[in-house]
Image 1: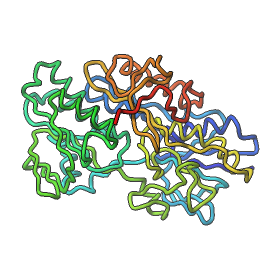
Image 2 (image 1 turned 90 degrees about the vertical axis):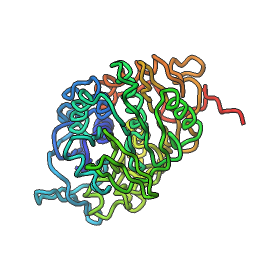
Image 3 (image 1 turned 180 degrees about the vertical axis):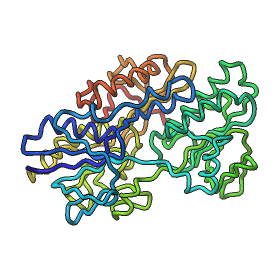
Image 4 (image 1 turned 90 degrees about the horizontal axis):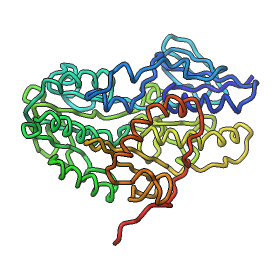
Length: 411
């Protein structure tokens, strides 16, 4: 009996377990380890402050795993890669023949002076990258009716890098619909030099911020949060006063990755970006947000990368050449308010461009243009996630990005 151990039962870990259970023989055992039994639909965090009920984003992990996959509840303490063993926090150990690390990323507000303390008070400083944070922010938005609202990104990378922009557009729409928009001054604060990392998308998203009268404070490297004074302070001396701060703390890898010596400075595991195989340990693959691949930490990346990985894993265990090369394909819906959304489609080498997706010319979704269809597509993805993606059913979209239907801007 050969043993596959998967650390993490989130999007990538669940997908990998379900896909591999279908193709690995009875001589394989598949075990998934996670710290609890709650699987969170993390895209729902964005909507919880506005309309989605918090309980809607949580389901029991165990029924989501295919028959024949063993689930173990417990915290991982260390990975001893040199002896193919995983130590758990309760002192027990688990051996493996092959290991998949799919432990994701986590917000760490302690990395910014004053942020953790201000968030803990849940008064005028909030976040929405945890369900607890999004739920508390839901209550605060109900009572906040006037003042300076900052939507802030501490640093990159973060999971779902467009989510802070989406929140800015949705909170603007929230106050517009309540007839209070003229009383709430909104500023989007980012360490980037624009609204997004790539120039074409940055131009479109920056234009949308301007159209919605949302200020942009770019190149803002945060030094500290002064919750008492209501001030966000940058290393260059700039200070932004706020009455309500919605912040995205720095995102880092899991502590066991750091303690095991498997991660970089931020706790993400270095891998070959095309095969997702650890650069140091050939029997370890890394899926989802836990790796250091140079693309967005997003659910779509976990989806496309995991499907690309399956054939590579089957080849690796048979000591064959890995057949698939993941191109970094990502597509992200960007809620823009007014019942519309934009769609970005890009990869390692190609930035988001205008066009149609998934079919050239036909679409029906438009790239880098707000539309009602895009918004409905984002809402529909919730059911696609639970019913198709996690169970390991192939979606009718290509894993690799295509240039068909895309238009490069004129020089």
